[in-house]
Image (cartoon, rainbow, N blue to C red; front, side, top):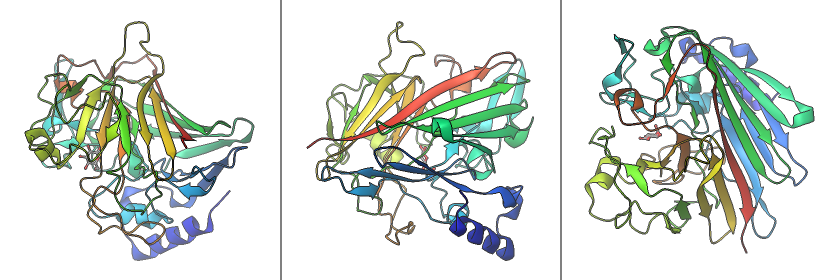
Amino acid sequence: MRSLAFSISFALVMMAGQVFAQVQDFDSIQLYTLKNKAGMTVKVTNYGAIITSIQVPDKAGKLGDVVLGYDSVEGYMNAVDKPYFGAVVGRYGNRIAKGKFELDGQTYTLSVNNGPNSLHGGIIGFDKVVWKADYRQDKNEIELTYHAKDKEEGYPGNLNVSVTYQLKDDNELLITYKATTDKATPVNITQHTYFNLKGEGSGDILGHELMLNADKYTPVDETLIPTGELPAVKGTPFDFTKAKAIGKDIGEKNEQLTFGGGYDHNWVLNRSEVDKGKMILAAKVVEPTTGRVLEVRTTESGVQFYCGNFLDGRLTGKSGKPYVHRGGFCLETQHYPDSPNQKNFPSTILKPGQEYHTQTSFRFGVEK
Ligand code: BGC
C-alpha cells in the first residue's frame, strides 16, 4: 500500500533539494500498514525502517497512536536535533567513544556526530537510508533489507542487514534483526521508537510505571560513554526492579542523572546462562490513566532506557501537538554502548561466516 502523504512529501523534498545526498532511490519510499485481527495497526516506512505509527486500544477499547513521529518523510528528514523517531539505528546503535576502535590490529575511525563520539551509526546511519521492502501478507510481516558498504561511515565490511516486523494477533510486534558481513565488524542494531502510552503528543511520560528486569547498569561519563563498571542499581534512582513511576526519582541529586539530563543509560538485563540467546522479559510499562501496558522481550543483553530528555517542545508531531520535554520514552534493546572499546563487555564483533540474529518484541495489552 502506497501512502499519498509519503509520495507527496517526497516530491516536496526533491523540489526543495533538502538532504538529497542522504538518500538514494527516493522513488521507492513507501508506507506499509500491518493490521491484526484485534484491530491493532502498525505503520512502517522503508525510509530508515521507521515505525511511523502504532495504534492500540486503551482499557475502554479506544484506539490511540502510542508512538511519536511524523506523517511525512520530510518530517523525519528535517527534524531538528535528530531524535531518531521510530527508526532502526545501526550499524552500531548507541555510542562509540571518540568514533574510534581497534580491531585485529587496525584502528578504525568512524563519523563523529555526537560531541566527541559516534552515535547510532554515524552521520548517515541506517535511520537515513532507503531499505528494500518485502511485504508478506500470509505472515503479516514486512522484511526490510539494506546493504551497508565496506567503509560506510568508517565501518569495515560489506554488511547485509535485514529487519522484519511481524504483527501477531495477540498484539505483539515481533522484530527480527539479521546481518552477515565479509569482514569482522561491530554490529549493534536496535529500534528507536518513542512511546507515550497515553497517546503521542499527550504530555510527558513521567507518570508511566516502569519495571526493568535488571539488577545492574552501565554508568557513564559526561559524554555518555560507559565507565566500564557494572554497579548494582539497588539503592539508586536506577532501581526499576520493582515497578515505579518514571518521574519518581528523576529529580534526585545524582551525577549520572545530570550527565544524561535524566535517564539515558543502558541497563544490564538479568539473564542466566540457561536463557542465553532466548527471549526474556526486559521491561514492562503500565500507563495508569489509559490502562495501556507495554511488555518488551528480547534476546539482547542490555536495554537503553532513554526518557526523551532532549525533547523540548520544538518538534511538533503528526497530530500537530508539540513533543514536550520527556514526551516519550525509548526502550532500545541492544548490547552495551561502546562495546568495541570495552574489554569487559560482551563482544559485538560479527565475523565473516557468522550470522547476527537478535529478536525483540513489543507486546501491548491493558490492565483495568
Ligand atoms: C541516546 C540519547 C540521544 C537519543 C536521540 C538515545 O538512544 O541515548 O542520548 O539523545 O538517542 O538521539
